[in-house]
Amino acid sequence: MSATAAVFELQQVRYRYQELTALDGIDLRIEQGSRNVLLGANGSGKSTLLRILDALYFPSSGSVRFHGRELTPKLFESDENAFDFRRRVGLVFQSPDVQLFNPTVFDEIAFGPLQLRWEREQILSRVNTVLDRFEIAHLRDRPPHRLSGGEKKRVAIASVLVLDPEVLLLDEPTAALDPRSESQIINLLASLGDGRRTVVIATHDLNLAVDIGDRCVLLERGRVAAEGDPREIVRDTELLGRVNLIHEHLHRHASGLVHSHPHRHPHEH
Amino acid sequence: MDERAHSRAGGDRKLMASRSARRASAFVEKSIHSLLETADYAARAERRAESRGLLQRLDPRSKLVGILLLIFAVVFSRALWPIALVFAAAVALALGSGIRLRAVAVSIWIPALLFTGAIALPSVFVVEHGGRSAAFLVSRSLTCATLSALLVFSTPWPALLKALRALRVPAIAVAMLGMTYRYLFSILDIARDMMESRRSRTVGALSGAEQRRIAAASAGVLLSRSVQLSREVHLAMLSRGYRGEAFTLEERRMRPRDWTSLALFAGFAALVTGFGR
Ligand SMILES: Nc1ncnc2c1ncn2[C@@H]1O[C@H](COP(=O)(O)OP(=O)(O)OP(=O)(O)O)[C@@H](O)[C@H]1O
Ligand SMILES: [Mg+2]
Image (cartoon, rainbow over all chains, first blue to last red; front, side, top):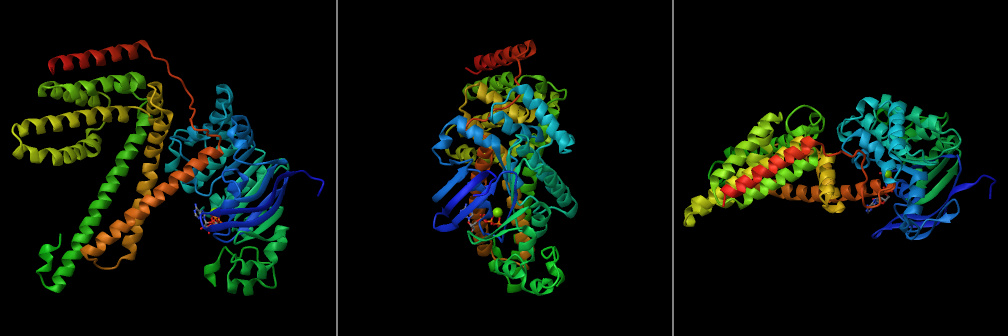
């Protein structure tokens, strides 16, 4: 075992949706303050794994530990344990339409603190700080479901970061954004990693892996296919081709030099 | 719808089918569009709610109780004219509160008339005094629907949900109501997307049977996507600390004005009940 403390430790985690096995024996260690990127093609199990880490799903078999304590449905029966965990771990969902269920942006951001029974004054001041920090103060009274894609994403991230969680889980934070909103979000995410917060990002965006991650976990049909430095994994075109993260012809094109944006312009070939 | 078309020549028939298909889907699209528009209008009640206007200035609880009392009075009235009086008062309140009558007509009056009309109309011809009972059915439902519209269009939705909680309506029922309202938008959006993508994929005409088959399949898909959506939303709530009862900010106090208006509502309801005996 390494010297740094593990936030999450997963042992042989399996997860089944009815007859479909989405996670098939995952062993994983997430270290404190690390920035992890879960890479994988559609359906490889990224979202499922994040939900396991957020204790929304519990493994069908195997175990998940958070700071050494096993996460089980039993543990979450107590309000105290549940609040403690929800306060420390936050998940930004893949679809903002799922995440944004409040009538106004203000209510959306206040939702978490309210559920955790913070003091009224503390909530008001914290929500206002977050509104300013994410440059969404002008959206305060708007219904979140009527915002643009980029605005929705910022509100969704703000609604989780308002609790200042020590672990931030993000499910495809840059999917379906235009290039400008995408770079805004990337800058925002890059500014979050101050070495204190642990970040886990699920994506099939190789750029994001290199820009933000210091560690990469490659998933293939519910298993860990590779683990390591994102720059090395992104260079392994044969591996990426096999797990469907890049195209056949790109693969040829990219051999030789490092082609760090292969997914960006697949149509040009 | 294509009975007549069958007797025509092939080419003609195809043209008819395609035209009626377009007309039918245009109608559905229009309805969804107007529903979305009305829902948006209701959503903006949140902003207008802070504005002037008679009803907007009242505490949601006094509005809720007052309007419930009037609804009871209408339901138990055995004479028509007190119901008409409440209806007139409701329209006056709508005007005094800046609520657009067009929105009320589209979202409330037309559906209420179509629905109760369909039930009541046959009785006009079949039952003795059928006309009278039909008039009661229609006027009651129209008036009650208008009263509820006043409430919804003049009150921020979260405040209304809180008022329901204050009246001891179970938390789970209130939460479900809130979600239904919120996700009506998403579900209507899904429906609209499905319609548009289907239109872009269908070239030329479809037969009536094909249309019905597609409509049934779409309804099935829409339902399962709605169920999945609600499951996901529940997870998103849990993730942020939700434990079965949603907490909200802001407590309002009942002011003298709220008590006065509640008394006015109650007095009016008592009068109507008295006249309607
Ligand atoms: N609610 C569900 N019910 C049944 N099967 C599901 C459900 N959610 C996901 N799956 C299946 O589990 C597998 C893993 O899905 P998951 O959503 O974790 O993949 P993903 O890597 O996040 O994919 P994407 O990149 O498309 O988001 C897929 O085969 C998917 O079809
Ligand atoms: Mg996913």
